[in-house]
Length: 95
Image (cartoon, rainbow, N blue to C red):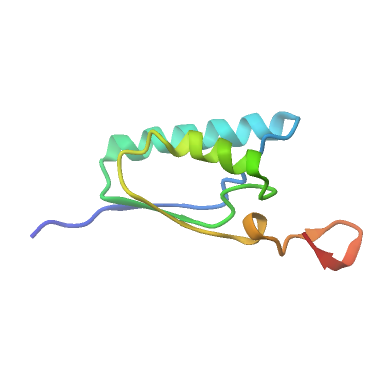
């Protein structure tokens, strides 16, 4: 009997914005992809907040970083991806 091996990733918050946060998050995801490939898992689940702001540029960067994955990938959107992220100073609206 073959065991199924999977990797669970979440809250990568990929962003193309300025500052150290963008580069740090991108490097973390690249390292995670390399580690997942090394483990030869059967599939990967990303459980939300792939991006930080849900912009087209953030999704494009995430896609580029995830492209080297050798296992099939399933994505579940989070509040940072679709909206629902509270905006500082605005209690009545979500992004």
